Length: 452
Ligand SMILES: NC(=O)c1ccc[n+]([C@@H]2O[C@H](COP(=O)([O-])OP(=O)(O)OC[C@H]3O[C@@H](n4cnc5c(N)ncnc54)[C@H](O)[C@@H]3O)[C@@H](O)[C@H]2O)c1
Ligand SMILES: O=c1ccn([C@@H]2O[C@H](COP(=O)(O)OP(=O)(O)O[C@H]3O[C@H](CO)[C@@H](O)[C@H](O)[C@H]3O)[C@@H](O)[C@H]2O)c(=O)[nH]1
Image (cartoon, rainbow, N blue to C red):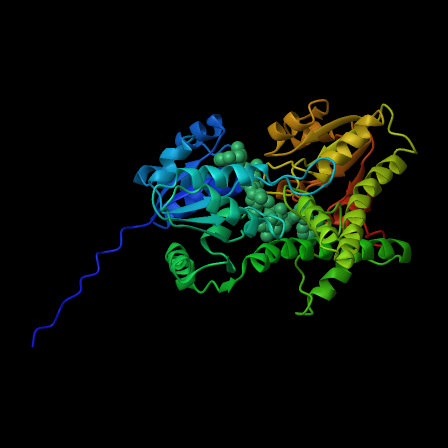
């Protein structure tokens, strides 16, 4: 009996294009190359592409420069501004471009996502999978699908699916290589198989895969950020009660955190959330919820946003109070400019908002941040900047700790006290030891920690 042998051609390794090489896209491109794929990163910003191609990460992200250098050396990773060439050669195309907040409506600006998706669709010469990773309002992917269908050249088989990203800045490399979940929205059997190939390594490690429809995938992402934001605003609201009642919000948060249903993470009271994600994402969800008539979600998020922004005003008021009602001509030392430690990102930074508000009231502000000095200076060129903790502290009438970099938390309060005009500190992130600073002669105020 003769057996007919069917030979399946060995699968060609997938080639990947990544559109947008900012905080998300650069990390994703490097991580995909680290996983063994041939990757091309595409951006409209020539300077960014040149820097990455030369092995320089244009922002601060721990571990990324080393991995960029390593993957560039393999020859698997390249960067270009030539969308057509990048698309023609790849099988899977990730959309990682920005979705910033629109100035007036607070809705997400989807222009970049549309442009990048269209650039991919227009240049597809054979079948391909377009994978949305940017954070978008629910309903966007379905609309993009129609655009793609109307744009791809005749006979080309293109699919669009949504695979939102949950990485944190400062931990972006680890989060990308070892995601705590992989959400795939709107896949077909074929594109699901392709995505399982892309994420074979984390799936083998145990990352759960959630396969769902497009709207659910889009909403998982913004709901995750909305929940995190709500948790922070919750603890900040409770911090207000603690202050009024003479309780300590840090001890309270620790006690709450022992309940596994609540958990300790994202219960750090203080200056509140900022950055390129949480603030804009809750506002975009607020806007979209109203459009959809889901007014309760919009009302809840409005409160979350108001509580959060109120924390910045509260710290400004505390600085005014500390200086006897006015900061005019007072020297204010500010430790921290980034929206959180381990990043140089100052998008919607609470620290810089507070520094700028005090500057506007006539204070002589000196800001120091170990990594975000340059980005801060570009965003707020009129503020004063120091190059060390000492320079920010020197001759200050009040010191504000606005981002909890380890070097600020570990600083020696006794030595710093001697540099000031008046040793008076406001700990807006709740990470300093009140007892230690007081023992070193500082007048210490912390949000929600009056009793500490
Ligand atoms: N930063 C994060 O931690 C993070 C995490 C998860 C999700 N996200 C989401 O990812 C998206 C990107 O965020 P980001 O922080 O990386 O923004 P970013 O501003 O750092 O980067 C966006 C990049 O896209 C480029 N770009 C714009 N139009 C383009 C086009 N047509 N083709 C190619 N490149 C183009 C820009 O030049 C820029 O380099 C947003 O939707 C954000 O909400 C961000
Ligand atoms: O207990 C806490 C925890 C955080 N923050 C603040 O919250 C903000 C956001 O922090 P974090 O979530 O760690 O930063 P991002 O890198 O912006 O990451 C968020 O936004 C990303 C973009 O959407 C998502 O991918 C991540 O999952 C989500 O955590 C920062 O200003 C923090 O200082 C607090 O005030 N208290």
